[in-house]
Amino acid sequence: MGPIKTDVIIVGEGITGLGIAYWLKKRGINVAVLAKEGVAGGTMKSVKDQGFLYETGANTALETSPHFKELVSELKLESEFIYANPEGNNRYILRNGILNSMPLGAGSFFFTKLFSLAAKIRLLKEPFIGRAEKEESIAEFVERRLGREFLDYAIDPFVAGVFAGKTEQLSVRSAFPKLYALEEKYGGLVKGMIKGAQERKQRAEKAKDRAETFSFVSGMQMLPQAICSSLGKAVYFNAKVTGVRNLTTDREEPSDEPDARRYLVEYLHHGKEEEIEGDVVVFAVPAYDAAPIIKPISKETAHVLSSIYYSPVVSLFLGVRREDIGHPLDGFGFLIPSKEQRKILGCLWNSCLFGNRAPSGMAALNAFIGGARQPELTDLSDEQIIQMTLDELKSIMQFSGKAVYLNITRWHKSIPQYEIGYQSKMDCLTRFEESNPGIVLAGNYRGGISVGDCIQNAYERAGDISTQILSTR
Ligand SMILES: Cc1cc2nc3c(=O)[nH]c(=O)nc-3n(C[C@H](O)[C@H](O)[C@H](O)COP(=O)(O)OP(=O)(O)OC[C@H]3O[C@@H](n4cnc5c(N)ncnc54)[C@H](O)[C@@H]3O)c2cc1C
Image (cartoon, rainbow, N blue to C red):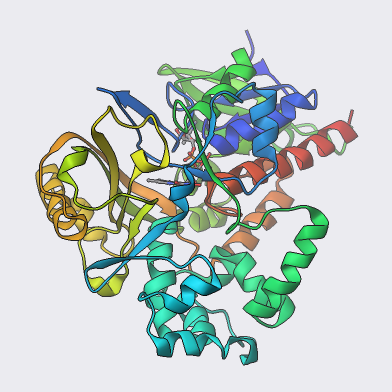
């Protein structure tokens, strides 16, 4: 018996791979998803235990893409879809050991104690600052346009919360392309926001800062699981891809059809060697997992893929008694600027965001440790991490008891860091795809790390692939 045959082989059972598979299938294209693990979701994993519901990876998503609602409706997930409580808009930042609400409007910005009067006045200079002359880090860009204090107490903690990254290392152009575009296209942030809002209104698009936070009653993993169920037998679990071969170029006799190309993907299915053949192979896996598979085809591309740095993070879930916390827990949680020199990056108050995350009388908290800021802390033992986090929570949010439930998830390689020079790496990947038609490199290291970005990119990649395939039929 020869290899299984299909149109598109998708490697990876994260939201990117499953999203691409879903939209290809919807366009009538045969797909096969090769999933290394035994469950769908990749970084999106939800756990229900002892009355707590928590995430080991992505906690929430922002509704930045219209395709979320499309998926929810087509997968009949309406009763599962939940927006975060409005209190979740309240986000705290630590300054001098005190939690301050991040101001949401001009009025609250004027009165906030998070920024000094000098920092507030400094913002008024922004419209008069010109464009950058070289590629800048987020730190350089923000300090130049908005001032040091805004960098330290707004952007630095935000970058730790989103990327588990450092503002000095990340490229503003690659990590925050929309922010960068405001300067590039309109000459400044204020000018750009005004003009951009008008343009978005015409396109009926939501901006990220306005997009709402959501999850699912059963947790974030519900979405990849529902996509996976809709794909039925097209998903092969416990199937780790080990190699790919271009059957067209390997052929001894040249093909009569110049456009004809076939790829053979080798994988270990429950430990047994198997093969599958298709016109297109999509690698929707982390860059470091794609590198060894791509290496026999292009050493240079493999080198670029393995050079992408993923910061390490520990995610510590804590179930605690509500009465043991002095803080009202009236928000999303808090983030900590580097300047505060603390041992955690921040903590989410999950039970404030969504109703069903903790049993009655309990609170569900999720602290993050390490990141590119303090990678060495992720090497500490479980006991040290727990004690260190409890000490921080005691001092920051007046926590006075013990955790009644704990779970540690260690992400040795959590989130790809879009560092200075990232665009040239991405250009190299695009050149590789152009010279190897039929191989697609996708995933959160290209075009954005959020779940919303992954969904939007999956939709667009599926559109490109289906156009390519349908044009040859
Ligand atoms: C701790 C943490 C918290 C986060 N929090 C948020 C958040 O709150 N909101 C948000 O929007 N985003 C968040 N993110 C980011 C977001 O979750 C990810 O960027 C996104 O889920 C990545 O999806 P993906 O499909 O691109 O990759 P992945 O989820 O990494 O999936 C890739 C899959 O490929 C599989 N694979 C690897 N190698 C092979 C192989 N050889 N053969 C077959 N399969 C293979 C893996 O098993 C994996 O399942 C968070 C990320 C982390 C790590």
